[in-house]
Length: 555
Ligand code: ATP
Ligand code: MG
Image 1 (cartoon, rainbow, N blue to C red):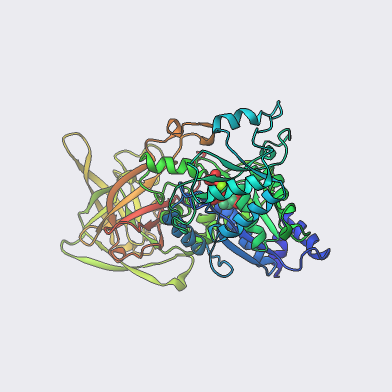
Image 2 (spheres, helix red, strand yellow; image 1 turned 120 degrees about the vertical axis):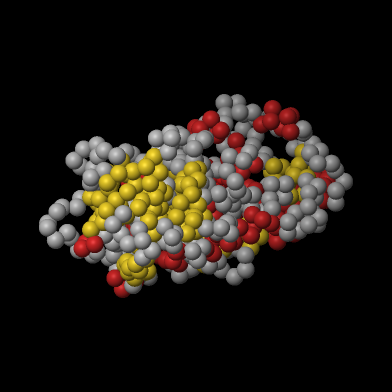
């Protein structure tokens, strides 16, 4: 283990548990797993769990499985299975052996259910869903025993086998654990273990019409795979009782080395939702275009937006792992990507809201080729060719007829600015259309200022960017704002009340010609504008804004 890992260990309570388990000899090696339900795309919260599970296994030279807890065919889809595998790989993690599926243990689960029935610990119950709810009681009142609780073992085995072969209708009966209807933990009041679903499963097709409940399958999946430390989020704290009960009552698993569960706090991210159900609603109701819409806090959305796998792993490291629930500041995620891209992204100039500028003392028909550094702090990255001529585009935002004050650093009539990577210009006058909008700005340039200050010590305060007009390449820019207006949208049952109607702004402008074949997935810093990457789903030149150059949320 390297020193960096040791440092990460000391701040993580799960590592303390593992250290103790290894030194006491309870375990000789570590096995973890990431166990998604394939009922949606992975989001940034899952990244926390992925980094923790795979990262812990790596730190201890152990193993981590990717296991789909696929026990609910009505909500699952092979599309989700494929996207999850892709996202875990993209994040840079490698699972042990083949991908695992809970569904490949359905035969074993069934045998374990029969074992519980044979021990008098499970029974087939014919109460309706409504009756079951009434019988369950509530947090203040104990529940009441089901009238089917005392059915004989033989009869229960017969009924369960009938359930399996499809002799009962969906909802007609379920298999329940016989635990304690007055337990203070609601999940222990004879929870359902199996229900009937006549659904085709993405892995097992029509082999089964009974499916195990998540709580029954989850702990068995871990135990079958020899997971040592089952890491999950705090909302499963109570469920640990049913997991322990199940394993303790099965002969195969009533041993000290069986999996133990440790809970950590979920990641909740400001201005985002990390509920798959709610993310699906956003897609289904067309608030966003798809699961990988760059506004989505999904791994695939972040990837398309231009986030790198390294920046997401760095973010997960920065937020750490604890048992305290909190709302994580979105600026932590943004500074992770900014730090990464500031270091690595090639620089370029893009004019997002173009306006034409004519340099009247520049020769007509002449085009100059200039060299600009790809990264001003990393000259070893080389240079790129840019062009200069009588007509260029600058950004509308960079011109005002009259400078508002002395601090103004952009272009105004009778003011000088430097054009990035080229000359100093001075605005003289402008044309406007009938509505008063500036159409063309006219300037003069100082030919003696290419790569140097004016010879007479004039101070040039501002630098603006530009693209030469005749060689400029048209591009679309997609500028994103927060998807939600409220920093904690989770507090709204109906997410639509907090949706930001202006979360996407589309602009048409120009890029340097050397970006006409920009790689998909490659990040660029458009100088003075922010970090952008070419959209992976568009054939045309479309650039998604990943993040601005500075944190502007709080201004
Ligand atoms: P959702 O509520 O969005 O459906 P889930 O917990 O049901 O999430 P799973 O597919 O079961 O989603 O999640 C797989 C693993 O990822 C689980 O171990 C779960 O604890 C963990 N996980 C899910 N959401 C978060 C989150 N926001 N932060 C950290 N871990 C999470
Ligand atoms: Mg879940």
